[in-house]
Length: 125
Image (tube, rainbow, N blue to C red; front, side):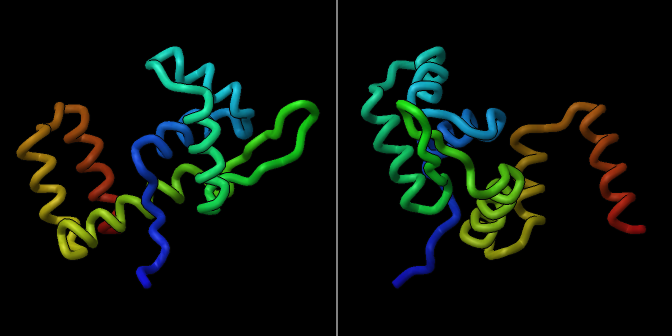
């Protein structure tokens, strides 16, 4: 049996990106937010949020008329886990090929280069 993956599907991540800044939300609130950007069925949002609860990413808090869902882990923790899993899977655990790929494919603005140099300088200290 494979270990449980911390990686979210694109739909799950989209839902979590709505909930994280809010801190907690009902299915209706998430649905309304997603509808501003694309067409999605209410029942799809409901199903996905129930899956996120089953996977341990959300916890349901009973509310008045509707249950309220809150994230179990902070966004930075989930993103870090997803990036680590991606680097392990795609680049055999080495971040260097990922950085080289990003630099070649995406390029960096001068500001981004300065920020990166600052970060690298801090790492050396």
